[in-house]
Image (cartoon, rainbow, N blue to C red; front, top):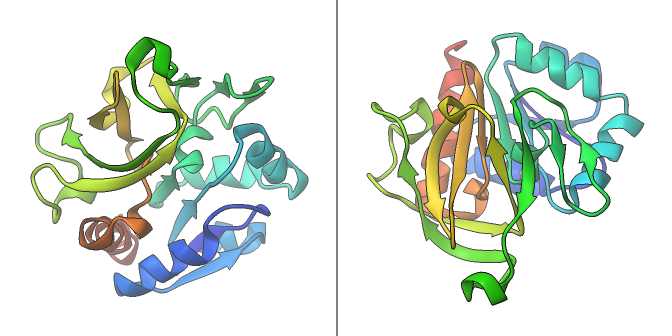
Length: 210
């Protein structure tokens, strides 16, 4: 079973429906015991970084999530769920993150610098940053179009965690990961067939115990 972490905000039901379409069972939960026993863990996110981190703290989920990431079980962050994996964010007054991956989260330059509106909202192409591509892209198109909604992006201090990139005034990480940990800045549950293939691939990792 895939545990979708409920910390009071996020696209929980949309993520669950995405896994249903991909043929995998999931459960929305804020119970650390269920998270500890799940075959895989998904950390979704919509909203402000600090609000999301505070929601995790209020439910006592920070250490259970760090333990899940260290457990070797498949772990997937989605949108702000990707950003929360890093050490800190510049959003608002700033906030610490889970510190699972090295780096921080920064804002896109505004339109005066790039001519591009912020937030970055809509469909964009992603490109694998590694050869061979990571396991989640195995069934996707060579350069799939996926759906983004975000004003901030991760700046890892270790480029080896970047699994795929996209372009929006700058080249930014669209997917990051290390070992059993994967995270996507876009919304696979809103990315039609390409996104469902990515969720299917993640569910297969959970099913196969990897």
